[in-house]
Length: 249
Length: 115
Image (cartoon, each protein chain N blue to C red):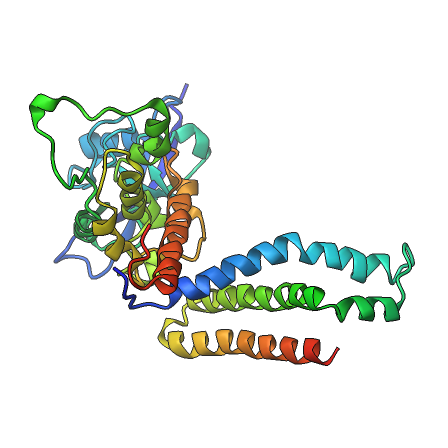
């Protein structure tokens, strides 16, 4: 019996050698429990050791193996070959990002935006450790929990046509994480994050295409976070118009 | 952050309000004035409708019903054009879209005023 195989059409780009990205086909064994990442590892181990891509946990937690699979942003550790039968499968680097080499993209832009929205708990006055934990009710936890599931895999940026057109757009994951901390009952940093979100390239740039929420592998709804942040921003704006002396949420 | 560099919240609030009106109220009028009356499911005379429209509160309602969805359209239309790649023309597109909505608002006021 001949072994079943599948073809992967992988985007290759070697800086200094290739003027532009090209496609290379590889034939890999088909296993019904293999994911695209397994196929890429097979190529790297057995066929061409120069193939470059990021990966780490193999279980949808680390967020490093995001790539375009047949044109759709996917975690390759969760994209099963069996769902793409008979193939071929096109594997490319995440859209909307500069490519460093092969399937590796530059993260700098996203990292800078992530820092800008201050995605950590901000307190006006930090209470001493001796005073114990900051307590939270289950309802207070539920308020932000889904937005805290983000693993920074950037699939939402690859799916967002607005980010593709306007690279300055703060973008889905960063806004969802800002919203996550704004919703946290322990946080007091709303006023510090608000200037970043209320910019023209903050929440207002979003045209509610909604693809970010469709492709999120962790069930986060960044589109909802952005629309709700728009409402919060618009309420702030209205209050500042009605009460210029201090209309604040 | 009380001083805003952007007028987006203003247009977005009108867009949001217009969307609510377009989704919840416009279908009612499409059904009543667009289907039920012309098809004779119910009979409301023109004179009676006109008399109803002459009430100040009804005029206010009609103003919101007609004017707000114009801003919903304008905002969507503006961003559709931008998403299609006409980002170099952002300012003229915004001026044309919202300008058309403002013109529609003035026309609505004019028509309602004359009833």
